[in-house]
Length: 191
Image: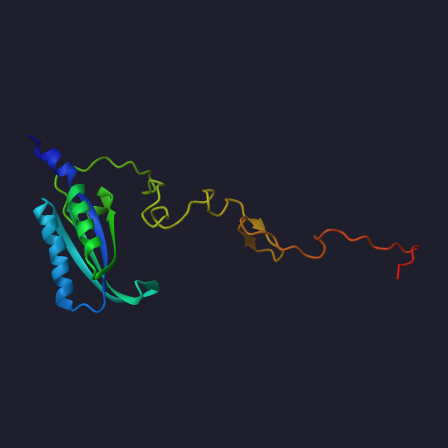
């Protein structure tokens, strides 16, 4: 039999973004979100906050639609329960897209009170572990100088005296271009 520490270790925090068809009624959207919450509860998880972002225009068409109704939900559940939620959302024709994102344990504490002791942090003194977040950027949103893809620690100086990132190729002027043979004063130009 599993002890309470082992049971709670299997429950992980998640965020689920669901994009519904805008042709659905408000109560139909609420029923589908409640069904997701009921699935999580029946699997031993705890549903959290539900944010209705509302109607948003897409950057590109999805399933021949240009708008969708966005809902963001937070929950804590076992991976098997979230696999069931994933299957349920994939089958539903009213769901245009969905994304289930597992949240780091220290981030999930903002939505639910943390019971028990926290693991020691592996982050450095700056508060960032150096790993990329789900958005692909390092935590904190900035790339440290000298890191791959970042601005070097000593930027080059451009022609106007301002600093340019080293990743930007310099603009070639006529003086920097390949030299062209100029006729000397004693040679006559060919016509």
